[in-house]
Image (cartoon, helix red, strand yellow):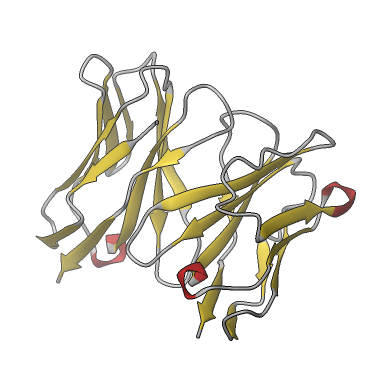
Length: 114
Length: 111
């Protein structure tokens, strides 16, 4: 079946602009994660959605970052007034349910802020 | 806060040799330890995992060992092949949905 998809695959933007990154999780997966992966670094947790529960936003690095998940499916990560330090690969993952279950990752969106 | 250290950051081995990657975690509540493989241009993919009630787990050429007392866990790949070349990430989870990832090991298998 279809895996997690993300769009765009690459995004180049100018400092100060807003960007929106999209994630389509695997159908039926109730849990959805966003991570940031800086060059040569590990995966940094950003935000977690589980069903209709309030999301865990504890990993968002600043109030310029926000995310929403509409209808329990598609999610968008928005970065306002982008800075050069926002340049990274943004990965989305989904899992079947809450808890310690396999996370299925999308291919990521590579964001470059000039 | 919770932390996972991973070593080495890069590892080169000859095809057919073994590769070992080690991780150390700080949160003693961690009880689930997955390993992910990330190939170039792709997202990470789960290759093996271990829970804290088990000391070792094997799946063909890969194995993971866990020492809860020392808070260490390791990935062992035997008879390495060129297609094993990738970045490997360890992670630790304290019984919730949150995973703390290591910084990754770039493995190169030389033909």
